Amino acid sequence: MENTFVKYADLLTITDYNKEMNKEKFEFLPVDDELVIGKYQEKCNMLNYGDKIPVRKTVYNKLKSIGQKLKSINCNYRLFVVYGFRALEIQTQYFNEIIETIKGSFNDEIEMYEYVHERVAVPNVAGHPTGGAVDVTIFNNDTNEFLDFGSQVLDWNDERRYYISKGISDDARVNRKLLRELMLVEEFAPFDGEWWHFSYGDKEWAFYYKYKQALYNQASASEAYSKVFAENNLMIKI
Image (cartoon, rainbow, N blue to C red; front, side, top):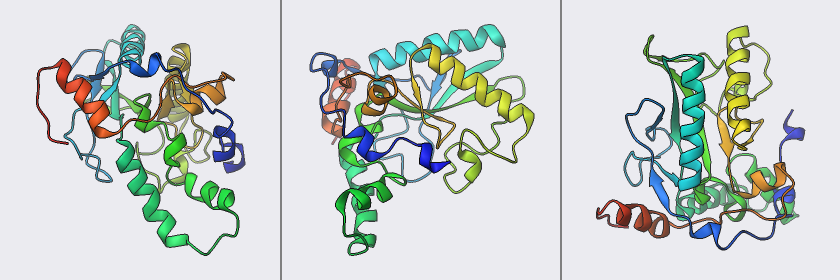
């Protein structure tokens, strides 16, 4: 199954990004809303800059559209985003931590980067630092629970995280298909290694849709948060 995933070498073929689109501002997802909820989870040190999730403005608009479609399917459903922007410096930190543990085990740098990329995306091609990648699930207001997707969102230790997995229920398969179809309508690119991961505007998106360039480049914390906090007249220490 892993052999079908997008490789680091694949993403290296996308060498450019749209300079004008990259100027697009970031916006916070609402922590309570009828269509889309966005709140970082406490897994893997995600709360570096608080629990509110910033994404690119276009990404937010597309998520709202998906939330509206979801609501028309079941009035109790809401799109729940558990992860969005990750600062480039944090992505680099995670990447370097793994590199330090495997130095000397590979003779070929690309081979080494491919190995790490399966665990933590190489920073120069990573999606989350662009503000275009999101990890999403669906929340049911009626039951006050997430829908069954066959594994817990963000559980990287469970091989059922793969979009095509054995040992998951028919309901989980239906829910995965529903989520993917809704995200594809808004031109998000799926990632088969994590049923919850989708991206718009990053290099993986460009490769998936065979575009020549990405829309967004990776951003540092100061680049992303200075924009979103300025829009909201708030202050943050970076």
